[in-house]
Figure 1 (cartoon, one colour):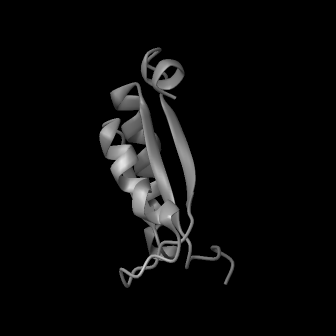
Figure 2 (cartoon, rainbow, N blue to C red):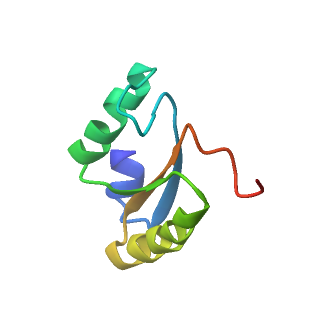
Length: 85
């Protein structure tokens, strides 16, 4: 990711399933424990999607990626199961 996305200055939105994340702080998988620190280590801005009200964050992620000419992540919380409910 560092070389391809960041080194080449490609505006891309990374859709990341936030496996094991719960909004209550009791992560059920170590993947959730390391997701945000990993993104922070690479200085990748991210937006968390937890429910339908957060859908606008996806648009903001695309705008931010274009502005920064680099990656922005959208973390889809494990408790969120779609916009069609």
